[in-house]
Amino acid sequence: MKKIMITGACGQIGSELVEKLRKEYGTDNVLATDIRKPTSSSGPFEVLDVMDAERMYELAKQFGADTLMHMAALLSATAEKNPVFAWNLNMGGLMNALETARKLDLQFFTPSSIGAFGPTTPKDNTPQDTLQRPTTMYGVNKVAGELLCDYYYTHFGVDTRGVRFPGLISNVTPPGGGTTDYAVDIYYKAVEEGHYTSYIAEGTYMDMMYMPDALQAIVDLMEADGEKLIHRNAFNITAMSFAPEHIAASIKRVMPTFTIDYDVDVARQTIAESWPNKIDDQAAKDEWQFQAQYDLDAMTADMLEKLRQKNIKHAS
Ligand code: SER
Image (cartoon, rainbow, N blue to C red):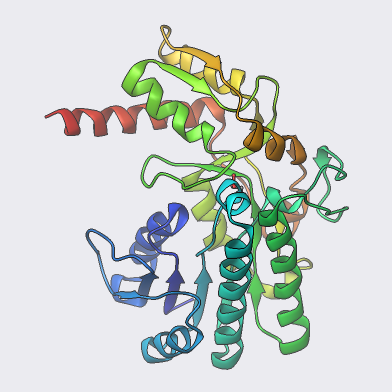
């Protein structure tokens, strides 16, 4: 990776990924693109609707990219509200990105998700290779995307790579319309109000990861020796698995007065229940030495400290 173009650069992952890559590879070697203009930009930026195949190709060519990271997508709960638009954007955008990578011989990354699993997938220690019959439009898009990335590697030799991200937690850019987002909201509400009403029910386990580990995973996978990759795309990775009461208990250890109650949103609860409790990420560990640094309490300590600092800045 020397010249990297990113789509969806203003999104939850993209906004932090751009900063990390600029630090590691140089500001001018990372082209951020998004359908929205950022409020401030730390380097090269171009407006790009990922449905515009020609512009995507031209931007990558003009920039002299050797790598394309395709991050633009609609998350699970939003996709469920507008499934036709989700299909068009998630699949159309991915096809345009893969075609750009094929024509310009770019290394390619795009994330899949725990959403690529469904209710008939084994729920505990979900294997790397297993039954995938998701019941959400987002999941359908992710499975199709995993297969497309494999196809572009086997048929066209495009160096496609990817992971199945669990719920991602960050204090920088809020996520938009995911099912796992309660685990982000809870920290904001803890700092702002000392209380959180969870839309996910007690006892609902899902895999999660702190954003610094997710960003490092992208870099490590892209830098890994391709010869050693057996799976290439859609590696299961996770850092922790918990239910709402566990993240609440972790916050309480830092803020003893914090309280939680529940007002379950059936739509998002149904999605959560169709996903695994805990996935097995041994393939990622074996093939490219994936290792997360943050467990639940380490993440809680860092999240609360960073959000308190932000709150103080806002207030002053
Ligand atoms: N975090 C995503 C969502 O909840 C899953 O990949 O939609």
